[in-house]
Image (tube, rainbow, N blue to C red; front, side, top):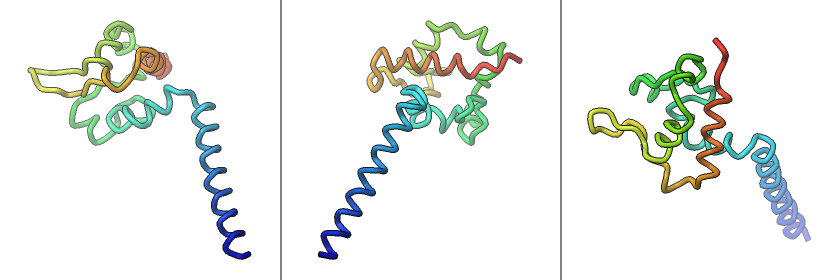
Length: 118
């Protein structure tokens, strides 16, 4: 009887954790999950690029209004889909094969949401 109770408790805990994660993802929005798992390691969760890779690659601060003004939605879409190269060297990998058009559009909106108005 004890084994069954422990198994049920463990199963319930796993199911509860999974449900909580799904609820968090839905609440945070699909772009936040994509951003956090694919972009934040270089751009930072806040978009400032204040990360080890961000400093190494001289990533622009996406919260800066001037950076945002210079970046069109079309260019952001292209950068996400095709990646970015400098002097023929990739500095941002392409995500076109990983993300569908709706996900790319959501990420562009996420980038726009980072603007601080400064």
